[in-house]
Image (cartoon, rainbow, N blue to C red; front, side, top):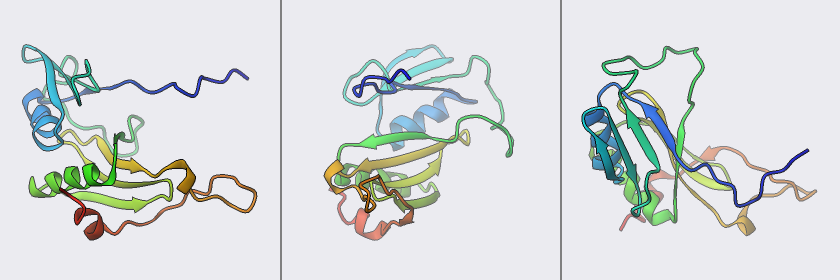
Length: 160
């Protein structure tokens, strides 16, 4: 079996959206990504830290469209990794202040995650990883991830 190099990463996500300005308001205005380039009223590329793009948004085939119906295939969620707990807490605080609903919050042992939907119904996970040395392991040393309740109040208390 061919294995990928451990440095391999998923570089970006490109989403079909119904309303470009509404999507930019969420990803830039609420989550804090920066618009790097906009192609008229049809597409935009956003990132953190000046990278060419972490998120692409377009209306090429979806202008005015509806979210996929339940029970259909497609993207489950986009996971946005924050460098530390305070950064995650600040992002979650912005989401709450924007009046958006959270769908869940979980401690997976290896990470802490908060789940919500973007304006087009796409799942969004905001998370931070724990250091690998702190990941839960079973008696044989295998990874033992789980899903426990995340103390959201304690997380938000760490927002700068």
